[in-house]
Image 1 (cartoon, helix red, strand yellow):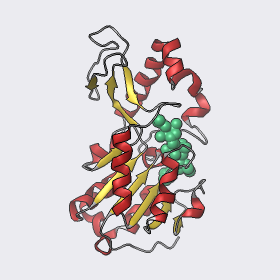
Image 2 (cartoon, helix red, strand yellow; image 1 turned 90 degrees about the vertical axis):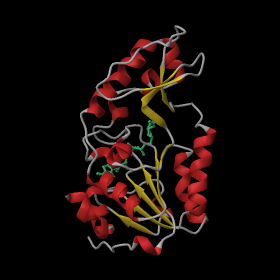
Image 3 (spheres, helix red, strand yellow; image 1 turned 180 degrees about the vertical axis):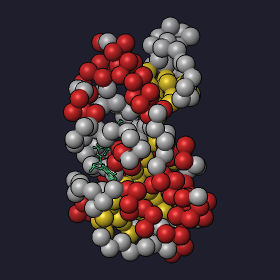
Length: 242
Ligand code: OAD
């Protein structure tokens, strides 16, 4: 596959828009497709407010398992290239649908987590938030007695308006939009490529398979993230591999 390297300096503001495929090569399963989380579990039973109200222990067990799975995984070279690029370029933002925290672990500083984080809990009663760390124990209940839910966006939940605003700001200024590993099926995140396009950004899709949004991109690379990103940004691969 021919990959035309990009010169980051040609762009004022770069946005990486990432989904589960970004972390697939770290060993974290995607949601859809072969081996996907939603082929093994019904989200109606483990990832919505109604399920949490009906059977909080079942929902919390599912998320405890997700955390154990993620804690055993490391950022891959794709995450690390994006993080290294931020060191070399004045404006690099990651807008991610992922809740695994791997962009931050790789060293990215400007990460907008559209769907929240597995590593934060929230009390539905008093709104308190609790940051948690891989390997550390954490409570199931708040001091007020209520079950603590993961501070993530479940099916049927609204996205946090402040988080949406931050994402919109980054899209408004972005002139290079690189989408990595998302099926483009979950809204409102799926609308971001269209917004970037309308704002005039040059846009690329990195995904071994065509997605719902493929027609919106100027260029598509049909290969895994860790194969495309080093060749797309050869100037940052040196320190990343070291
Ligand atoms: P999906 O599981 O829907 O899609 C993953 C995409 O990654 C697919 O299009 C794959 O072809 C692609 N892919 C797989 N391996 C890849 C690789 N190595 N490199 C690049 N691409 C690869 O995941 P998302 O689009 O992220 O919601 O799903 C969106 C949301 O649905 C998630 O944020 C999650 C889920 O329900 C929440 O967690 C709230």
